[in-house]
Length: 289
Image (cartoon, rainbow, N blue to C red; front, side):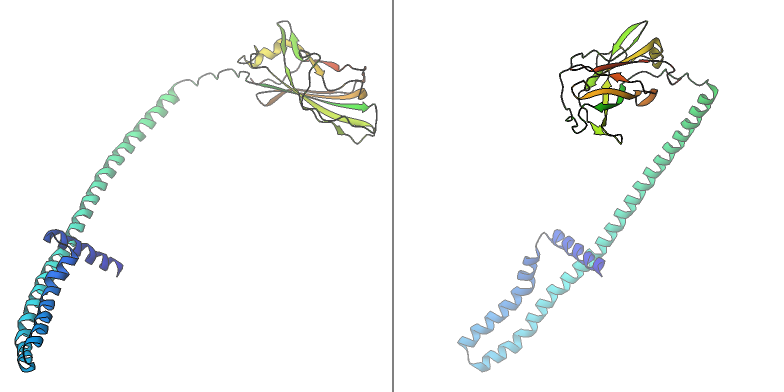
């Protein structure tokens, strides 16, 4: 039903466009004008002539007025019906045109798909006939060093406050060293202290990274084989808060992959006002091939 009313609405709009008029004009001049003229004339005669003359005029004028009214409605009905047919035909032609356009576009896409399949087949054949390329060597983008310690508290009842910023006494105390020299790592000056299950002991983890201007960045992983020593300065431990450290865990990551990991249980005595530096043999790295 909704589509039928849409059809009538479009047909009426086409009728108004073909006549160059509006709905108001049709109602006023084609339908209302004869009726209003008849009513005004009857009212005028009612005022000027006796009732017998008025009744005679109404009987004599009603039929011509009705005929004039029906003629206007008849011609409007014919034009409206013609516009309904025209609207249906125009919609059909529009759908036919859209269908032809879609068929043409579909044919073009089918041809393009066939060409692409042919090109893919040729690329596969060419790829299978060529030797596989040698992979580029993995290069260093970033280094992440973690150094975890367990130390004995000088005052077992007091845990040092966490550090979020520090002025380092030796900013170059952490590095890898070998025959080609040293490559330094810079500390991330943030550390948290946590109590362990052992009474009077606390654990902490220090983190270090390569500076942005490090010579190692962009070098192949194999460059790390040139180093045989790893020195780590635990800048957040000193004799003011701890007496000794007896457990160490080191994890050295390159591009997020663990390449070196070791643990040790050597006791290191802490001196007042001084942090500790631990040295490790930087060997047996798990470097990607």
